[in-house]
Length: 146
Image 1 (cartoon, one colour):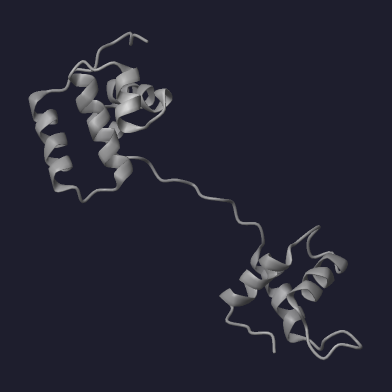
Image 2 (image 1 turned 45 degrees about the vertical axis):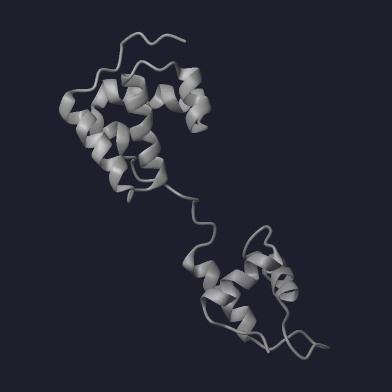
């Protein structure tokens, strides 16, 4: 696959990338980006780079496009990653904790995470929740069911 524009690193950029690689202290994703740019600048084909670095063709294309569009810094350094959205508000977490701290259901001597999960759904705090999620929430609050 041919690129419309060719990636041509400046001498200073090549040196900077080589220096970054020789340090080896950056995240592996950043080092892979450096290697991609150096190999593309050396005239290696995308398929060769993909095999040598075990990356997808789209990764090579994206790094090259980013370099051509925004420069070396943008191509090598990645932006912030958003992470997973928050599933429960503070109010919902507080309700789950309050249930765990309340008296157990009749006929039971204590709460279990499965019972808490069932009660949370029963009370309409959320549509569904797994007992493992309840367990993680309670661990974060250092609450132990005894």
